[in-house]
Image (cartoon, rainbow, N blue to C red; front, side):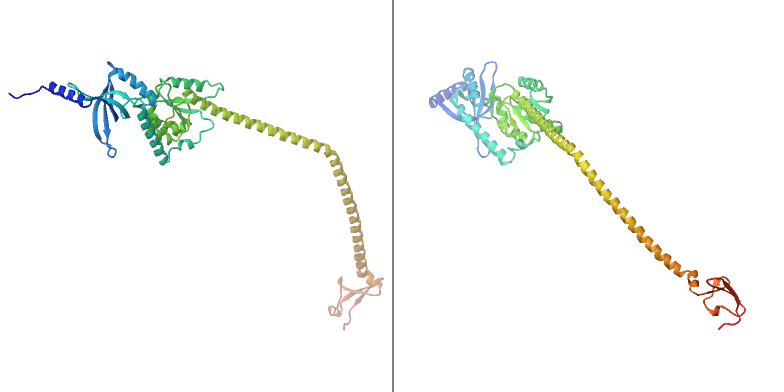
Length: 414
């Protein structure tokens, strides 16, 4: 009869042989995939994969698990060191032992992890994203925008239940200067795998009403540092960098600086620091206006004082100048009157001389004067006769002499 093994016997042999062949633990570089935590027992189940560097296709895959006691230590250690949540899609360097369970098959038992490897990979990715944004010419776009001097209309992207949101509103609306602001909430998920898509969706909504706002605020309060990995996303960073309104961030703690922070118009440490940014912006504008107002008042006072002094000087010199001017005008008028009088006298004298000449001319030209010199005037029908041809025999004529008249009848003419 042929010998045979049961499946469990075969699997047990394989398990024993693997333990003999791989008795030690091994440090393995891989990418996490399908990370799941069983919340009832605390075990973490996942897959490790390796991708082809050129094609991106999976070239190797292995199931893995981290037992609850180990996972309770490794997870916080990894996340606090890297600032990256232990999720799918991250490069890790893990220490594993090779295991083959008769029931569950081949798997890798994770017993340790080196966060420095992941940290280096994350930094490499960050630098690649930053370099890509710079090459595309968008890295500094948002920083080059001009923030209005009175930024009061603020679009706020955050979770409505976040404690940081309440702190932001309280600090902004109850500022000691009494400045008025108009914040409007665009709700978004601020941690977990949906963070990137949720914030981009909020930015898209704000874009439709961009003319109604002066700036965009992205804030989150508290939470684990590992939740900041979503803000190192190329897609979210390029959306913020190219947004047409200034983007102000307050998404991390003082020591955290994400790519979104790097491309934003201004990066604040916390949500309350973001509120301080806006209050201080209005304080600066208000102080500038007060300084301008004081300058105008001061300059106006100086000019009024100068004009007042000039008026005093005018008032002091005006009487003397007026008297001198009046005296000068009086002298000028007297000279003009005297000149006019002399001109009138001369004009009358000249006219009298002309009249005398005309009078003499009329006297010497008059018939009486001519008759007195022995001449006579012959008249016919009341008109003087200048030629004998005007007379004919039988005409009655009148001869005027200096003394008397002679009436005659023409008998002949020659």
